[in-house]
Length: 567
Ligand SMILES: *[C@@H]1O[C@H](CO)[C@@H](O)[C@H](O)[C@H]1NC(C)=O
Ligand SMILES: *[C@@H]1O[C@H](CO)[C@@H](O)[C@H](O)[C@H]1NC(C)=O
Image (cartoon, rainbow, N blue to C red):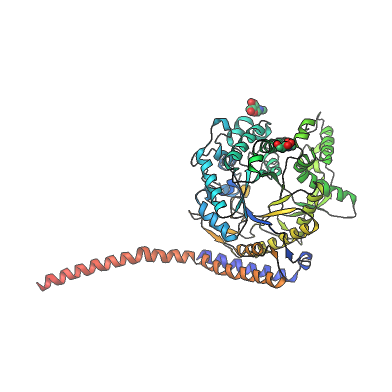
């Protein structure tokens, strides 16, 4: 009974939001661009190992810092959820590949779990053959289905032993361990994998892991730890790229890049030079922090200036931002065959000078404030507002800043607004439509975007938010042991964009929308009816046979009695 009521409530809210949407048309909608993406444009979806695999201690896998962080019992994660089972994807390879085929994607971006392949993190300590076999089979299944694997080496789940013994990314020796691990992956999978992403969103890894402590390893080394961690990540990335270039590229002919996440920063007041500078600073502290060393050989000047000045005012002898030697600069520069870009939302930026006396912190170093427009549609996550035009600006910014690099969009998506079993995710459809359309405009502007990865294939473990945010094309019932998957409306819609490779014309695109909602309302009813179905199942599987058996027994007894009385 209960789930049915929840679904009804969702419908009411949905209706209200739909009425709201028809009244207010955003400027992007008004200037919607009908047209096609370049031939061969690659459409995909993404996910990561820790968020989906489960099987956290199975078949020889070692613990990662995220296993330790979620098991600590200190309330690190909303509802004290863990990813011990997550989507159970480790045991659902064929099922997940079938979902990818259903979506018609040309690529799937996923990550390898370092401690599944190297339980201690160190290659010399031994390789977990079962881990190699698992990913090898998965890659084979993708290739067999004509789906290109885009493989991330590290998406935050550092082997716990590297953290406990050596301090994780605070220690420069991680670069060697990472490079050994990368070489193992190139060797084992590089015959079939031609797109490698070294790190996924290392800024969040550094900031949340070593500054705020909201993520594993949960350290709060304000104003220092994150810069050090990032410094070592950049070196590790460069070392892995060189390893590929020197040893594997000639045979394997693949590409190695990095995936950087950044929101767009728009000046609050375009006539105020201080706001314009603040917005530029926002982008340099976000994207430039990693992209500038990789594309231009060093940190952005504005980061060096600000952090250097604040460090001096705080009485430190050296800047809290580490320095690359001349040799390191030339070693790091040019170590990306493509730029992976993750993007979710936009902020308005205005200048604010923080006194250095407040103590060192990343926030303090940037001297700015982030704002949101109350008119922006807020989606499931508190931080995520749908602002499609920001995407085009970010793509254009990356194009001009880094010399028109080859770009793959590695993450872009929206989570679900409500907590209930809602398959008609029309706000996600609107987000997908708006953002991919702005990407199309950016390509017409000249950005060299070759692929787009929508985030994400499945509802999954969302780090410190547990299972409360749902980014998936497929809804997962996390209360059920086998984690069943159900398609949301956006599956149908995304599939149409992929098949058409763009937006042919208004009439057709509108029919996609109605078709998607039609299909999902059928699925919704099925999902709501499921408790009823399982009740029916009990009836047919237990009640009916029991009653029949009883009837036969009684009949037999009666027959015996009858026979006896006759004789
Ligand atoms: C850094 O790691 C190395 C091992 O590679 C270790 O010998 C050293 O003690 C570590 N440094 C710190 C500060 O933990
Ligand atoms: C990459 O490898 C090629 C071929 O071995 C070599 O010529 C080139 O110098 C390498 N690039 C860098 C930046 O080391």
